[in-house]
Amino acid sequence: MLRFRPKAGNPFLILGLLFLIWLLLPAAIKRIGQNALYEFQAPSAVLASYIEDVGAYWSVRTRSKRDLIETGKELSRLNALYRIQAGETEALRAYNLRLRDLLDIPPPPGFRYEVAQVVRRDLSNWWQYITIRKGRSAGIVPGNGVVFSGGIVGRVREVYAYTSVVELISSRTFRMAAHFSGDTRPVRYEGALIPSLTNPKGSVRDVPSDIYASPEAPVSLVSSRLGGVFPDGLLIGEVRYLETDSSGLFQSGIVQLNEDLLDLNEVTVIVLTDPAAQEIFGSNR
Image 1: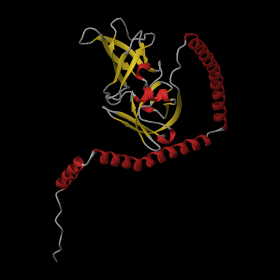
Image 2 (image 1 turned 90 degrees about the vertical axis):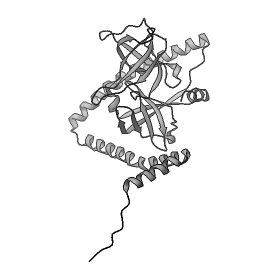
Image 3 (image 1 turned 120 degrees about the vertical axis):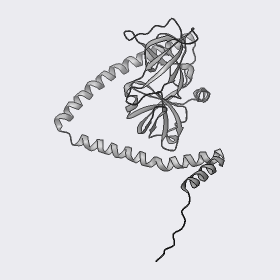
Image 4 (image 1 turned 90 degrees about the horizontal axis):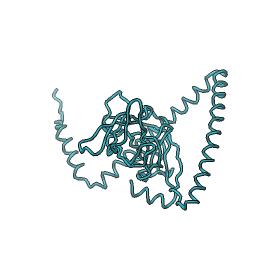
């Protein structure tokens, strides 16, 4: 017995029509659609992060008492070291305030730290992003700097209700002002293409010709206050070799970034607090 079968449409034609409709849509509608889709997908990544937290908790609960005692002793030693370092930091802060009062220097923009957990990584050769488990509800806005114990992580690119997307410092489209440790002259840092299974790298340009770097005597590249996002002096990476660029006036080189940059579990967002800081931040987003 013959059966009627509806004629199937050309899938390429349908795909082309959908693509054409998407191109003709206004940019505002596209943006709203992208945000709605991301907000719909975000809970799954956040839920997976919470499940990992529960798994880590129960893995600790199953450890023996001997292991827990040794871990507690190690934490006690670290806490003692951190107390000493905190005292030194407080003494330096007080000394800095006295010098600022004597020299009548205005205070730097105020900021606070917002600790967030990494829930997703989107790493490729060209762009590199991570998604963190805090967003607008925590006061985070696009352009906030992100750091960790090893230095600078990157900059907040997109912010949603409870999550944020951070562009890593190793991303090819990342740019920031920097300078070398012990030298206040500004240079330009850029992210670089990273082949698979290699350590993260960047590049530095517009380096004065009198700065020397070698594998035996590398120089540290740190953040500059001129960028308006990061405090001055945060570590970016090490430069082990410099060569004269095409202009013949300046040097350029490769910046070796922290190896832990691509395997982060927790980061800290620098959220500016006072109005003056927000103005400076807004001009450098």
